[in-house]
Amino acid sequence: MKLESGSEGSLAIHTTCSLQLAVNEVRRTLSQRGLMDHALENLNLLSPDAAREEFLKCCGSNNWALHMAGARPFKTVAELLNQADSLWWSLAADDWLTAFRSHPKIGEQRAAEKVAVQAQAWSEAEQAGTRAAAAETTLALAEGNREYEQRFGYIFIVCASGKTAAEMLGLLRDRLHNDPEKELRVAAEEQRKITQLRLRKLVKSLESGV
Image (cartoon, rainbow, N blue to C red; front, side):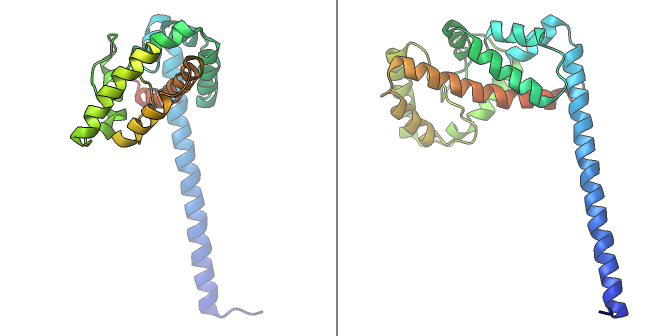
């Protein structure tokens, strides 16, 4: 089939545009990968104590942070995240409880333990859904927090990012029905999710080397 000259021109332009888009996408991918590699290099080059402090921003367990610092160097973000999960599930319950204490209660701003300024800022951002909550929801969360802590002995932990106050209240009330053994695993899984999100934020913050 013979194409009209106008059709040939349009096809050529379309092909050129498609190729340029593909090239741009490859360049973006390589650029992002380069930034990630630079961030991981910055993390890998930190002293053990400095690395431990960075990891503590992501998870408040001292043992977890210490072992993460010792597990360096990390070649990829995926390796970093996988190692974080593996170490987290290898910890004892006391280490999990230590991590829980580095979070403020849902609807509050201060954690039971002193945390880094960046960790506090991340907590506030993660709990953004509580700021627009109705007064009755805020009161219900405070009451639910008290009931939860009395039942299980530690604060209610939930990966709050993207959740409304009403959604978190619903989860809190549902989890009050769990037995202590099951709830500890549920809370640990929520902490794992938080840690994964924060590790990605940490890598992002290290891209510029600051």
